Length: 368
Image (cartoon, rainbow, N blue to C red; front, side, top):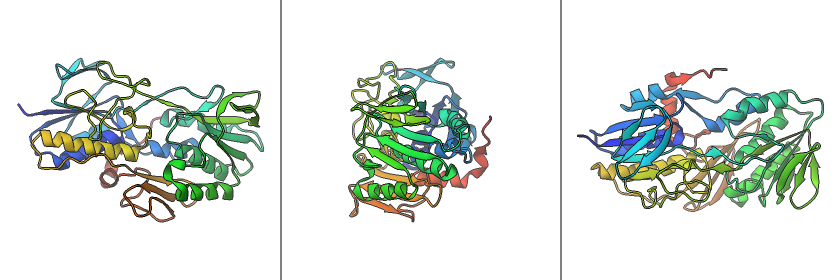
């Protein structure tokens, strides 16, 4: 019987793992994708949708899996039985595997009390409605508390709101020491420059605590007036029954994507205990995991440890800015109005970006 590879998840990490396996592994294995949704949604584009722009692009998973020779099972992963090499699903019972790649994403954790949550696609319509319902000269704050590693959407939401609502007073409140600090000093200065150009008030090094009585209250004292506060929630791990997890439900993985202490199970993306939750990094992690899986299938490919290169496109309401941070580059922190990597776009992974661009016929219209 041919080897059974199961990829759980229907996002960027899952597609990246599928494409990498197709490249690295020899033919003859059975590939199944277990996904709870019918479409792959380009989550990084939801900031546009939330601020009055076009809907985020969606691609049919049925069409993608058909094209890649995989079987799609539309269901939710609920548990993993490591000894029997089976996963439990909500509607389809047990599915067997010989190698399992988990790219199931994270859940939305604690949100700032009193604030309007923004966690991507699920909150885009509510934020769009709230912005459209604001009165004249509104005060809008975008905030995040501690425990949110990926804050680029915070700056994009502020810039896009300022561009679409020129009468609004827009501000940002974040515990970060400087804006988009994860990209390094040079890129951070570029983000700060764009915020200043847009007239956005920047409050760094503060810890938002709650929203009450028309103000964002700060843990260290004081408050910032606001008619609307939008906050990024802390992510929470999937806490999959049968698998190890840290205190927050995330999967501990080694540098090759293996779930620690668990044979033949790998994980990539937001479900892992790595602190930054971003699609481009998820794709890089999935590539590393796919290499390991392919070796077990007889593929002639060398294992490669995960060495992240952080890439992001900052949407500004005008020309986008390309940001990059990589310890392996001679310029560790960079920002440019020109692409800094091949196949640039909001999906910062060349393999995934090229595949989607070549299969525009798989795009579907979101149902409202």
